[in-house]
Image 1: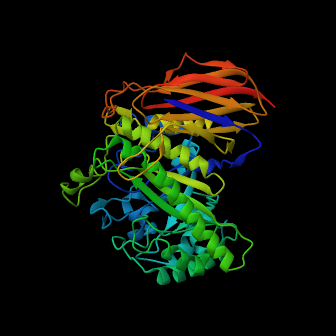
Image 2: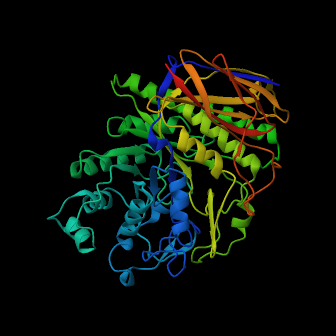
Image 3: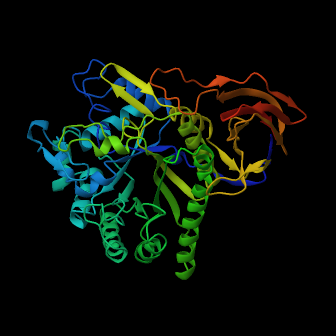
Length: 496
C-alpha cells in the first residue's frame, strides 16, 4: 500500500487551542472515589489525592477538567459538597443509582486542579435546579468577598476567589434519560436566562450551551437551531458529544467511523453558521466537543451492577489495541477541525471509560493513553490542512475510506513539524511526507505504536510506544514504512 502527505505551511487550518486536550471527571462509579480521591491509601497525600494518578494526568498534559458531570450534574446540589466534611449530607445519586457521600466537592476539586496543573470547566445544574443555584455558585466561586456566598467560600477555607471562567449550561438536556429533561424551547429559554444572571455576577465568563447528546437523536439539528435562536448572543460555544463502539466486531468499519466523526462536526458547524446568517450576526460560534471516546465494553457489566453502592464499578471499559487506533484517528479528526473545535474533553479520565485505571496498589495505563499522550504533548501549534493520497477501502457503512489518516502540526516556536499518521490497513504502507516551503534539517524523533493483537488490552503494562529506526529524510521528503494497523508520529526540525 501507498500513502503520501504533503505539508505546506501556507495552507493552515488554525492554531490549535490548548483546551482541545481536556477531559471530563464525573461523580460516576470509581471516577472520583478510588480514582482521584482515595484517603487512607498509602499512595494518597494528606488531601486524599492519589499521587500516581496526579502524575499520570500530568503526563497527559490535560488542560481543562469538566466537572462534576455529565448526567450527575442534573441532580446535583453543589452546596452538598462544601463545608466541614462531617456535616456534608449523603445523598442518592439518581443519575447512576449510586450513593454519593459528598466527601469530594468543590474545594477538593479546585485543590486537585492546582495539584495537577489543570483548569476547571464547571457545569451548572439545569435539570433539577436552575437560575438561582447557578448565580449563587458563580458568586461563591468568583466574587472577591463581602457577600453571603463569597464570605461563605472564605469561611470554608478559600480566601481568594476561584475565578472559574469556563461554564457549561447543563448537560445533554435533549435526552429523556436526563434528570429535568426539557424540549429545545424550554431549555433554550432557561439557558438564556441563566447565562444572563451568571454574567451579571461575572461578565467575563465563557459559556457552553448544550447541543445534541448524539447524532442519532430525532431532534439532532433542529435542537441546535432552536436552542441557538435563544442563546446565540449569550454563549461562546455549543457542546457536542460523540462515542463510538465496535459492537459488531468489524475492525474496518469501526476505524472508518472517523468519517462519521468528521461529518458530525462539519454538520454542527453548518447549523451554527446557518443561525449566524439568519441572525445577521458578526459573531462566529465555536464548538466544545466536551465528551468523546470509545465506549461499549462495559455495557453488559453495568446492567448487572446492583444499585445504591458507594463507588461501584461502572463504565470500566478495558480498552484494547483497536480502541487505541480509533482514538488516534479521532484525535486527527479533531485537529482537522481546529478552526472551530476549541474545547474537547476526553470522557473520562480515571477508571470510568478512561485512559488511567487504579486499584489499591497502583495504576495501569490503558491502550488509549498512548495516542492521546503524544498528540497532547506534541500536537501544539498550527494545524496544517492535510493534502494526502492513499489507497482506499469500502466497509459496511462507508465507501472510499483512506487506509491512511494523517495530519501535520507546525510549532514555529520550536521550529518543528510534527506528523501524526495512522495506517488502518492490515498490510504495511510505504509512507512519505513531502515538506514544502520548509527546509527539513533532521528527524528529531520517529515512533510507532504497533505490533499488538487488536484485542490485546494492557493490564499487564506491556504496551509501549517504540522507536521507528527505519526513516530517511532526503530532499525535504521523509520516507518510511508504516506497520500494519499502526499509530505513528514523526518530529522534524525545520527552517522556513
